Figure 1 (tube, rainbow, N blue to C red):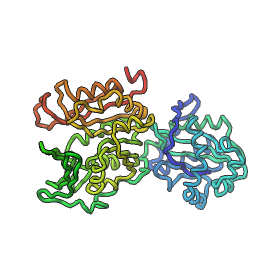
Figure 2: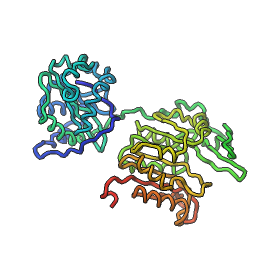
Figure 3: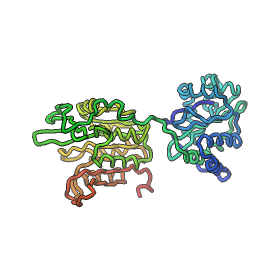
Length: 439
């Protein structure tokens, strides 16, 4: 018996179909009978003991690792399993990898060998007390392309046959769906409340300048005005507000296009890793960290001065699971390994450039490679809907490279539609993975 391993390792979920002889409806029936997930999980272990046969069993749901369902194990053993989770996870990683390469099921003695198992800490601390000839079957419950739980069945004096493995493989999809009918615990803490780490965020009356930096010919100013903290860029011709965040709620900017960037996350099949090009006041980063707990965030910003201002005045460092890179966004994507991100958010439009780097064929090809299968990108473009210019250029480039593009213009509720009007337009594109999807 071993503890729940982490859920970050990649691998096939198998897509196993139920066989005609497998009574998969039993899991739905158990879910109907038991209103609480803990009751359901206990009933599942009892049913598995009847169907498969085991001396001990352990079911740990993502986010609920401290409260596993167990069968045949005492409180002391369970406490030891939870306490030693990190060590056991490393020892059992080859078993987990073997399971994910197959159909989500593997047996420890088949992968590590009987002597290899006996050399592990989890055998010494836990499994050895169950039986000297102990064998453990590890199975991973899939739901909508993700692993939601780990199931372990242990036998004290016999191993698991290929027939046993096949039976467990066949029941996993239906079991994952049944467990998914209950609320799933959140496996990562959400973003810290605004009150923590925001000593600099104070309501302002009128306008108050907080910081000034020089960026080439531009002057960057951080100011508090009318309830927002603004990042303003100015040159001899005028000024432009690059970003703003609410003083009372720094996850709000008051600009509707910010929320539209979430459409990329909605389109993506999974939301484990997201890349952001363009920093500003980090509003979208903060929203993603809060709305999608556990997501890994990478921020690429080419100007170190902007990063410094964001850290000092927009609490960039308080955003969890954030990796920051100072680099050119287009070049960074071109150097990325395939499938690096599930979601990309590009909010770095430069109206002074004659042609957008995000519409270049080389960049779109790199973007297509860097997105995971079913991944999606959202790009904020400032332009018109008149059929020419930056919006059309971006749409055409993404359509050629990705094949599924949506255009969402930002309009006020009472605004008259004028194609020539300059506005924010969010362009969303998804990475299609099959001929059927591409039409």
